[in-house]
Image 1 (cartoon, rainbow, N blue to C red):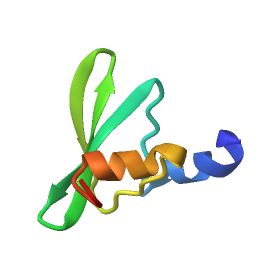
Image 2 (cartoon, rainbow, N blue to C red):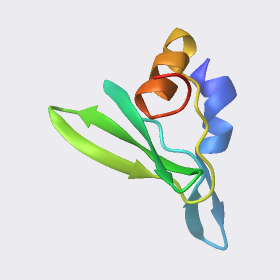
Image 3 (tube, helix red, strand yellow):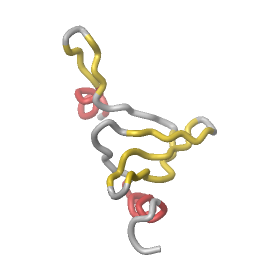
Length: 80
């Protein structure tokens, strides 16, 4: 599935330089969506036992399945 649906978006060569469009992180737990005012700018994750802030250049796309509601609530969106 990832080869068919994700690989075309991971990156491409433009003018001899590799331009990355999407970063795929495995064995990583998203803990919180990070905001600058009302705009989502990245996520806080737990990767290999360390907390890491991962910021997006343009867009943050949230797709956490059944955990999407929980993730939004712990990020401060929705009822307390």
